[in-house]
Length: 182
Image 1 (tube, one colour):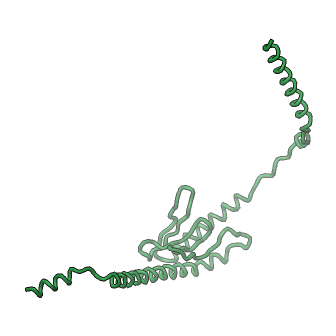
Image 2 (cartoon, rainbow, N blue to C red; image 1 turned 45 degrees about the vertical axis):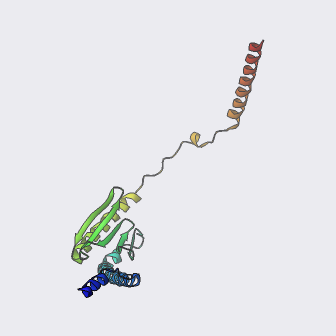
Image 3 (cartoon, rainbow, N blue to C red; image 1 turned 60 degrees about the horizontal axis):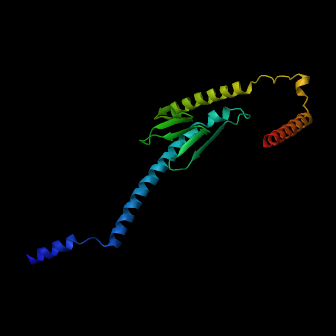
C-alpha cells in the first residue's frame, strides 16, 4: 500500500522543463513539416496552371505590358496575372480560386478544380482587360485655346494698385484715430 502511494506521488510530479521543451519542439517540427508539404503542393499546382497559361501569354502583343505573371512565395502562394488579379488555392488545397482585388474588396472571378476551366476564365479576363486598354487609349484631341487667352497677364499693375490702396487705408486709419484722440 505504501508503495502504491509512492508511485502515485511520482506520477503526480510535473514533467521536467527540459523534457517538456523537447516534446514541444518535436510537435512544432511535425506541424511545420506538414505545413511545408501543403505549401509545396500548392506551389506545384500553381506551377501546373502557370505552364498551362504559356500559350495564352505568348499570344499577347509585345506592346501590351499590362500583365506580369509570376508565382509569389508567401504565407499563401499566389499566381499573379496582373497587378489586381491572381490565382490562389482554396481551403481544400485542390480548388483553384481566381480573384480580383477591387476598391470594394476582393471579387471571386472563377473557381474550378481543373486547369482547363481556369485557363478559359483567365483568357476571358485578359481579353476584357485588353479591350478596356484599347478604349482608354482612344482620346479626344486637346481643345485649342484662342490667342487672347494664351497671353499671360502682367502682375505688376495689380501689385501697384494694392500698395496704393493699402497706403491710403493706413493714412485714413491714422487720421481717424488722431481725430478721435482730440
